[in-house]
Image 1: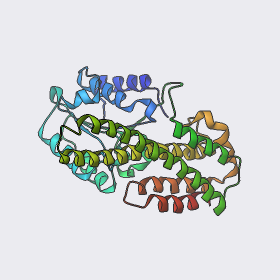
Image 2: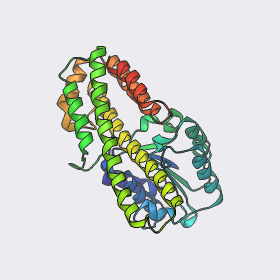
Image 3: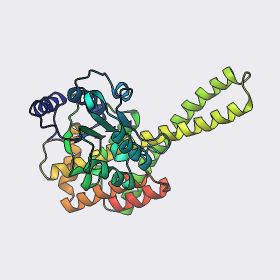
Image 4: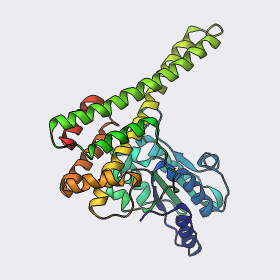
Length: 323
């Protein structure tokens, strides 16, 4: 059952007072639940320190692992470095803390590497996994951690323009036919239009900034700087696009998850304001059918973090999920 942050912290404080804190926790919830802020407070509770952010904690012997820039993956090397550092150093009062942000970005090899640390942590170790998609983690990891699902504050969830467009498309899905190739291709086309508009907007904004930068520095630096900066801008465009595409995929997964949640009578929904639309799909689709559709979209989300062709992956998955 998801908790409000204050209630979850109250329960953790009681566990600490009773010397019952575990060594590994999975902190899940949407971005509005502020997983990083909660993790910061958790580390403060466990150690008695009073730092204000994970960035501050990273300067005080805490290992913070984040997805790497362009691929947005948590690599196997990063996980092994976390293990090595935990075995060599300690933080406040002898504690050893490690945090993996966006833990679902660990590919299978990195997750398997992390299992060794999870199964045999050094004494006084506290590991925190932060994720919006706990279902993307291996069951062997989830069975070895204590999950704290967080609720966002009331009215906190905000959607970008592109997320609002996707929600409008999904709301229409609840009132039009599904289960045909034509319906699947239509939905895929609408999703791709949103992605194309997203990429074009990011590209335009970053290239305009770069043009202004060239005017300012172009006459005072050599050509090698310009070439390096061009490559960096291209990488930044791709990284920003991938990050926002991931947010759209998270939203699609939340929508499909709400359909399944309503079929099993779950009280909490990721998108409660769209309850009527997801309820309509929950009533129209058989539970086994809805579960299959959700699994296909989950696999699509995973495949998009590989070198797969985006258009082909979308076509195959949307046909399987909605055709």
